[in-house]
Structures are given as C-alpha cells and as structure tokens.
Length: 435
Ligand SMILES: [Zn+2]
Image (cartoon, helix red, strand yellow):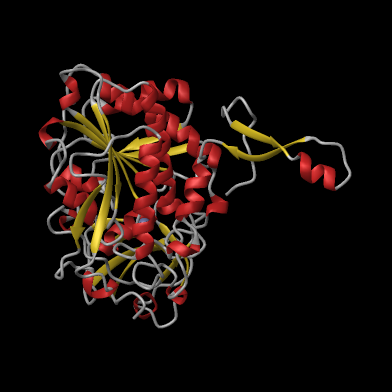
C-alpha cells in the first residue's frame, strides 16, 4: 500500500486517530495524539500496484493470479457503487480446446472470467439501453507465448500499462459516473482472455447482458497509462457518424492532442463488438519499448495522465449515455479476416525484428534482427524501414503486430522495405515465437 496520501480535503480522507497515552507514559513523554491508521480512497495507482504484484503471476487467463485479480476487481466495482448483473459479478467462459492459441499457451479447458458491474440508468425508458466501457485485465503470465522478449520466458510479465492501466481507469470512470449516472445503463466489463485472442469479449458478444441491438456503443480502454505530450489516440472514430464531432467537442475543454482515426478493427476487445455491428472507440496512449516485455511495470505509469484520460472518457460515456437517440453505425468489411469474433486471431507468426520504438518514419524502422530469425534469413537488417507485410500496409508497430497476427507460422510473405533511397521486397518464411 502506498504511504503517500493525497492532501486531506481533496480526497476527503477519513482519519482515525487514537491517543496512545499509555505507551507515551511508559516512554516518559507527554501524552499526544498519534494517528493509528487512516482510511482513504483507493487511488488508481493502488489498483495498478495490486494487479501488477508478482504474486499475481502476470494474470494469464485461467491462472490463480487471474482469479485473484477478478475477485479484486469485483470488490472494487462494489466499493465504487456498481451492481452485479443477475448472474453475479463474473461471466465465465472456457478456453476451447481448438482455440488457435490453446496449443501454445497451455490454457485449453481453463476457465476465464469477465467481471461485470452495472450502473443502472436513471431514465425509466433509456435505462433499458446500454453503453459499455471495457478493459481487459489478463496479461501474458510468465511470457514465452506472446512475449516480445523471447529470452524472458519464466519471468513474470506484470503488464502495468497492458492493461492494469485500463482496469484501473475502468474503476475511476465508474466512481465518477456513480455520482451522477447518465440516462442509459452503463455496463462496465473487465475482460479476460484478451491476450489469447479476444476470448472474453467474443464470449460477451455471444451472451450479452443487454441486447446488442440496444447497446449504443462500446468504449475500450487498452494501454492508457503512458500519456506523453498529451497525445491520446482514439481508434474507431469512423464507426459512428456522430463520433468525430463528439470527440472534437469533448476535447474543446480537455485540451488533449487527440488523434481520432480509423475503423473498429484493431488487436483489442473493441473488434468483437465492431464485428457485431456496434460503434466502438479504443482509447490508447500509444506503444512503447516495454510493450509485451517484463519491463512494463507500475513505476512507469503516468498517473496524472491516466486521470486526465479518465476524465475525457467519462465525458464521452456521459454524452453517449444521455443523448436522446442512438448513434448511426458505420460498418466496414473486416480488414483482417482472422480478427472476426468467431474466428479469433491466430496468435501470430514470428519474424524476429528489433523495432526502433523512438522513430516512426511512415513505417517500422529496425534497430536490427535477431540471430537465426526468419528476418535475418530473409536478408532484413538494421535501418531497414518495413512499410508492408503481405497484403497489409505497415505504417507503425501496431499495424505490424496486426499484420503478423494475421499470418500463421510457416507462411511465406513478401515484405516491402525502404533501404536508404531504394525500396526493395524480400520474402520471409515466418516462424514460431520462441521457436
Ligand atoms: Zn497486450
């Protein structure tokens, strides 16, 4: 528990003090009032530190650590004023034996748990409609499968930004909205199974608490703890006609450097809802060098930034929860066939590049390639800028991750690179992660 307290008053801390006169007398000093313990609100960083403690083991879906995280989140949901659904706080699903990931991650047959809390709407009619706010809480466990650092297998991957940050923000938003609930019901969902291929959100879409036809929108928080230069990316801005203007007007006061763009397909839980025809937004404070590595730790979270983004998203939920009519969805053909909710993404194939996270010259610049990797065999090398993999443009690392996820190990793909003044194409036969 953090020893740091917010200024009294701001946080309305309840301070219980007790006189410790007998001890003072024994020590021969004058009796004085000593605060014995303090009850104060739980701060976002407390939630993140709980979820990223080593004893939770990296929160791999189906593991005891993930169950501890789920129980904690349910307690926090209740503490900030949410209610359980008719079936309780947990929505369980089983990782299918034939799930694309089950072979690699040893999770077939295990039980994942979505944690669901409701904030009933205050309008007697509109309360039967819903706005969903979601964030996955599972992570990569002890690495190996899914880790971008093949040498770290066996080390706990704590996943502070990915995605304890989103889970903590979920609670922040719930707490703020509970004070003045919007007209529609807000459904808060902490998803499991995201890292294994959006399993928890795919399950919810099949068994929603409120019908999807009356679910106005789904807002996803995934990696929201590293706000830098006020830059907030919002994917899915093109999934409802009303979104661009709404985001603009919210940002009039928030003053963020907002990058609102794109359709609703991306490598996180919003894809499950977009595939089901719902407008979606994915809030994201961008990739960094600790992504899917053991160094994604709580000390690197920008707490002020997290609270700032929480305020922005709270405004969006309020606006969506109170607007008189539904949104006008804009659907698109799936960009990545494998990201459909039913198919589930393959975990993806291994290329073995070391991307330069600080430079984004309209592609992914490489610092180097791993020895013996498919990238090395294909002739890729440091300073190459990858701009295309197979059918997909690769403007940034997230797109590259998505491109690799759309392929299976053993696929041979053409890779377009900028090398100095030239553009060249190489062919690489993709491998298996860690293999
Ligand atoms: Zn992740």
